[in-house]
Amino acid sequence: MLSVYETEPGKVSWEMLQSELLEQPKEVLIGLINAWAKNYWSNQGYWLLFVERDFGTDSAARLDGEIWEYMAKAQAHRLIKAFKLGKDVQALATVLKYCAAQWVTAGFEWEFLEITDNKIIMQVNKCPMGTFRDSQNLPLFPCKIGAPPLYIALATTVNPKFKTTCLHAHPDERVEGVMCRWEFILEEN
Image (cartoon, rainbow, N blue to C red):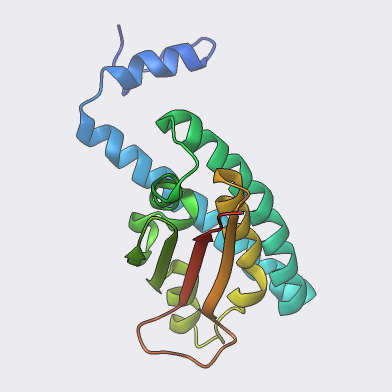
């Protein structure tokens, strides 16, 4: 079998790629996952920037929220299936850890401030879009408008009984070292 670095003419199939990937050391696979996550976020970031440039911040935030709502549902379903998750708080914590919207090597720094049987409080301290916008002296993106559909969709895909609340996000007054903070409550009824 050829290595991943040696390619011959012919059809590229998922089976062929799987076979090549299974021959790779774990470090190479982790590097690929990181590269894919960074590519994903680069694409998302530029898309958002260009939509904002051509149609304004309000339209960009609204469209970003619509896209993330659909992407979050798809990602949550895939993660639930891959990890064989239930419908509890720990299932949501796992989805939050592994969804592309939170991938730490793409430039996110975030933490769980609280996890109980029925509640998660999550805080994003640094995100790629905020870091980029700060570096370009652009105002922070109004995540309080665009991000709720993402987090609501992630949570309710795990369990429709989750209630999601944005505790802090821009355009709220800036808090040093905090980009956004979210609360997820698993309601009993």
